[in-house]
Amino acid sequence: MKPQKTDQIQQATNLQKKLEDYLNANNQELSNDKKQAVINSFLSGKYSDLSGVTAIRGFIYQYYVTVKYLVDMVFSRLAWWDKVIFELLDDIALYGNGKIRFVQVKTLGDSNLANYLKPSDLYQRTKKKGSWLDKLFLLNVHIFDIEHKSIVTDNALIDQHELQFELATNAQYNSNISIFEKDDLYRNDRDENEDEYEDLISKMEKNNLSWEVSFRGNTFTFNSESYKEPFKNPKWYLKRFRIQRYGVIETLREEILRTIMSNTSGNHDAFHQYKANLVFDLILGEVIKRTCQDGDNIDYKNFVFDKDTFQQQLDQWVSQADHSALEASTRNSLNGKFETCFERIHRDFQEEAWSSSLKHELLVTLSNIQDQFSTQVHEGADPYAYQRFLQRLFFRINSQSRIPMDIHDHEHRLYKALKYIIYCLVFYNKTSPSPKEASVIFKGGFTDMDQKKIFSIYNAREKEDFEVAMKAVRVSSLNCSVSQTMVHDYNCFIADYIEKGVKTKSRKRRGLDSVHTSITQPILEEEMKDQGIEITRQTENIKFYSINFIKDHFLYLLYDEPPTQSFREEEVIEQWHEELLKKHVNSMEDKQ
Image 1 (cartoon, rainbow, N blue to C red):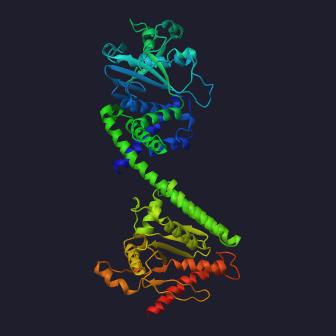
Image 2 (image 1 turned 120 degrees about the vertical axis):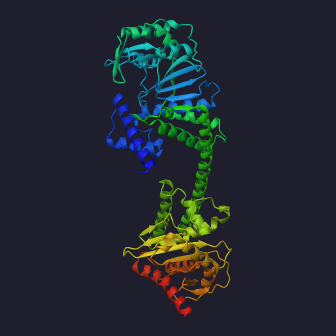
Image 3 (image 1 turned 180 degrees about the horizontal axis):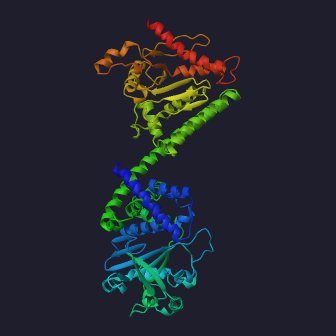
């Protein structure tokens, strides 16, 4: 098994354990399917999908608070810490410049506006477990002495560092709690009136403490004496304690995004916000990836985020987000171009003199083609479907890179290609998009009788005559893995070629003006051999036509008498196929 695959499996296992521990500790339940969906969202980086899962919002909230402190570490002038530590000391710890802040994250359901944080939430001890404050205060300043099976104060920690304690929450609270609101310097207007702490202190002392903690196979017990050490009474802790409300998870994310946007280049517009969201997700993904560890092989360094290292990573992520956002902007811009063409084609069909039944079939085919693009782009099958279509249409290559020309100048050519593709496919009940690996456009149509036709289109942009354009398509076909394995004939229509040496034929009633030649014609064989390219049987199934073939055929159908009732009538489809085949046969006869 590949190492990367093994890492992913281990990460999924660790995530599952962390999720189970959280759900058990918070009396929450999720079905197995939802648990797996949550884990999949984490592993795939689709973090926005997680905020709607109410049962784990607190689980996610801790990661969001971590991201906030990482971003503040780099950008805030008030940030004194140069390390953010995840789940080694407390939920989160900030360290630097002789200070340590222990942060415990506690959330309440934010769907109910009346769900206020109460004083009892801070001091209540149930099932012989420590309260929120006990866990925040006592666990962080005591050491478990395994040799003597006792709990001792970590005096070195206290003497050498200025300690701070924080309860980070999403919940609202009333005035009884607001006395613990403090700024980033841990000051508030009530600092001189410590008597306000007395009510909470009396509750902490009245509610007898007998809390058993397991550590490395040993059991240690905190009791009421744990708060009666000299100078380490409840007031000592509360003077160094604050409650910090960051709001619901969406509000917290918005605050972090504003910080990122305020410290990265951009115009604070939707494009800039999109980049900030990308940066946020990259940071969040890094925290999750590094801290989803469990068992005996934990590398504790992964839980410590150093400022200098994180700054370097952040710079790379911002650059990566710039590139990704630019690509997304290009896709959105191209999406707009395609939508403009589709809207124009829709108007054409509505305004043209088609019968209502034919008009309906054209519009349904148009909608199907639009849906194919939308599915490819927005559901992840091929996010670069627009670029790829244009590269195939104009350059006969499979590429997701930006088009080396101003597409605005060629929008009319895109419009023509899309409209004529719709014409080609309107005869068929089922259509298929171009395979992602194809170098040229392949659009498939299938009838109820399982007849299949494949259509391609190339726009020469008035840079090549018909013969050179055919040669270009042949060469691209030889280099296309999809074309080489194709067993069906396919019809390639060439548009906007230079009118040079193009012969046209007069048509009978059902015969159409077009230009067609078979790949078997030897006109370019020697030239291609000179280039080291041998004509193979895989390319014998290409049939070339001028784009006028489609135009003339549909002009005929539009004004045919008696009127055609449906493009999908057996006779109409046979006539369409016969015209394609007839031109091939006629060309072979002409050649002979």
